[in-house]
Length: 255
Image (cartoon, rainbow, N blue to C red):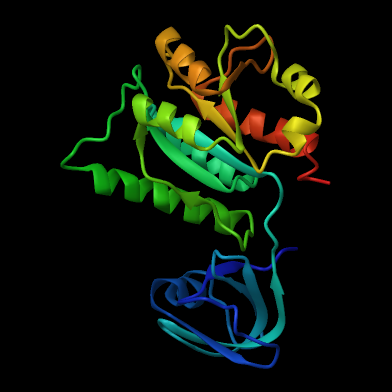
């Protein structure tokens, strides 16, 4: 069974086996009070930047613990990088998508204010709303025992997303659309090594009302490919995860 994972107070790149690492604050409190871990038990500390320290508890307090490092490792970045551009959706379906895609290994998440998004980033609550996305990424990364966590990028609207597509030419941009004439597997077969050799692949997922024709055309004109997933119409909360799974197999990220 996998060891419980906790986020370190800072970078772990300089830690070596035999070192003592301390953890304080809410994470330590969760380990000792909620999980009731005691001296002699093992756990993992990660910093979200790819470093993992496995060790044994040597001292615990209400909001403090000291860990003796027994093993230190670093998770390399996988290629190509995989990104999710997720439209805001009502009922926290956007956060469900972020949670699932983080567990599936995506490397970056971008919130997107689509034309048909019912949910909106309100100026007076934008930072609080973004914090919910950040907390979702953290919780899902810990749940899936990741040491290299996704980057949460700044929110975009449709115009700035089109500009981003035009700027990041090394990225293969895929717009999921139920009316697309070509499926994702078919496009990957067509592109062949071009797809596999891309530095990153970004999947754009619309809101519950779908991506508008104007947006789809705007993204296509900027350099994106419009693709479908299959005969079923998926919710905004599941489409990104389905695409992430297909891409992880096709590109060898899960090899």
